Amino acid sequence: MASTRITELLGTAVPVIAAPLGLGTTPAFLGAVAAAGAIGFVGLTHPPPDEVEARVRAVAEATGGRFGVNFSLIADKRENLRRAIDAGARIVSLWQDDPGPYARIAKDAGALVLWTVSGPAEAARARDLGVDIIVAQGSEAGGHLVGLTPGLVNIPAVVDAACGVPVAAAGGIADGRGLAAALALGAEAIWLGTRFVASRECALHDGYKARIVEADPGDAVETLLYDIGWPDSPHRVLRNGLIDAWMRAGCPASGARPGEGEIVGRQADGTAVPRYHIQSPAVGFEGAFEGAWAEMALYAGQSAGLVRDVPSVAEIVERLMLEANEAAGAATRILR
Ligand SMILES: Cc1cc2nc3c(=O)[nH]c(=O)nc-3n(C[C@H](O)[C@H](O)[C@H](O)COP(=O)(O)O)c2cc1C
Image (cartoon, helix red, strand yellow):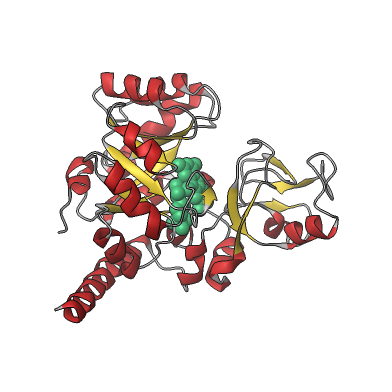
């Protein structure tokens, strides 16, 4: 049992949070995260409002009620937030754009609010907005990026600016050494994406997981390339053949890129995915050609360079705690 203000607020046994992972986050994945004593978040930005209630109920059932909901505020998502709260969601994570109106709706309903900030300037606003937990995303993170500086600087800077609001650290963390380091820098939990993509229960494509296992830290690059469905938003992905082809073509603007307009394949539910779309390949993806999945957005942080296998969620959480204790002990022995 490892107790911090964040574990107490979220009702977890360990200071570990699984980020929303697009189609990888299923009720079964979140159930495994909750069973391991942690908590995960399901993204509810994209589903139509009519589907929100069913998704929240399925996740609540799979997790025994220990889950959070996440909204990227790239358009007006207040209706989705209201529906999620009506369906029983009580932990709400927000990022991108102004979280103020959303934080008010969530707080009025008695929900906890998390806000993923870009750095200390936003952290200083958090208390005024009623934010309960700040997520400090470093610029080495996977997926879409708000963080401006790497975690080693960002975490303590956000902690100092947070006026006592507890901070969870995101980006660059994939093992217990990272957990121990984040705690030493003043964070009270870690928020992991890439490490949990490469877990058995995550419902993303096996080839995508294998690419994470093979990657070096520098293979996870920042780009604006995957912009269909979410334009002008920087994101970190594994460098792949499509990025190379686009660079060879002289980095043309959207609308004039190699193969633009073609469908690269279909997800398991039949949804067609155009080239340069924001979706990653999920379990059941059928490519329109050999290796199509590898051209899609393989979101990953530089922490991919620390991921060497695809274990169960339970094993990941257990290792994180064991390794963090070892790393903290080693540091203490040196400092004594
Ligand atoms: C596949 C994937 C999907 C993501 N989707 C979201 C999302 O929908 N909402 C969000 O707040 N963050 C999202 N993120 C970013 C994470 O919240 C987090 O900041 C990041 O994963 C931390 O860096 P790490 O990948 O090195 O652990 C995503 C990350 C990945 C890898």
